[in-house]
Length: 393
Image 1 (cartoon, rainbow, N blue to C red):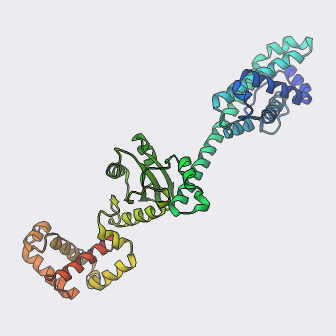
Image 2: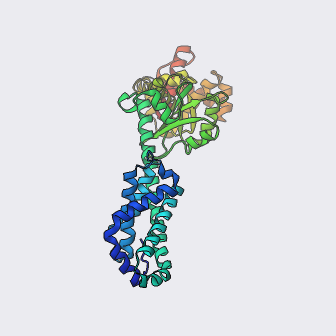
């Protein structure tokens, strides 16, 4: 608390009143209960707790006014504890003002007759102390509120993690958890998994607030490299609308699971969302739904097998210098996209068709495959998808 100059006569009176703090504080608590109805409900702030706050704060105020400041605990205890009990800040401040007025009245009442005139003249000093302490109450309350929000967010994150990982020891009863997270007990849900652009950074910035504006409930957690959440779909806002909303927020690859009806299925949904995310090209900004590209899902779900496919089909091509490798991979993709049409592939690549023919022949030589055969062409296509998903381009 900042220093406030107090008249010597007031300091002396406060020093004499310090031993009487406890009975005076109990009277202060009675006054607060009478004038602030919120505190009359002992289920909110029990009688003993309010009395204890009043004792601590009166000792704090009188001690500072007497020039013998005690430990800086009074207003901080009030602010912190009241926040913990969910007492609105306006009520906290109202109670504190009632208490400050009580202290002033007690000083006037108990002062010696010959000191009352001086005490009245020192009213500004008394209220300056009260204002300073009220500022401390405000800072303490806000600090405690921020801490409470932080703890609640951490708890929400833990509960979301329990759902996504299927950990009953963390998530507990799914129905209760869904109520706490605000997801509802029934409906249609999906899991979303987004890559983080940097450790601990959101891959979907402000996603919960954005969805809330569309009256869509969701709960999220942020890990080292992923942001994941459960979204409760509603009538008029299904997977299509969710995909569009996420595309506006995405900073990297984002996967969406298939819809499911029971939150117990969130663990499987998380796996699907992660696989869908991995099905997009590394470094891309894309929102991918599980099942949109079955081949990508298959390859992304088994990266070891995908790598084995690459080595079996395209190892000689990947061994080329980077620029040459890119030329052959791009040509192969354009040729397959054009259904084997040399002319169409040449137009897409802006090269002469003979250049495309030469490159395709070289691919056949390097891979040992006849790309006019559907089986060999399919093997090349799958291998190219493996290269894309694994980021080996």
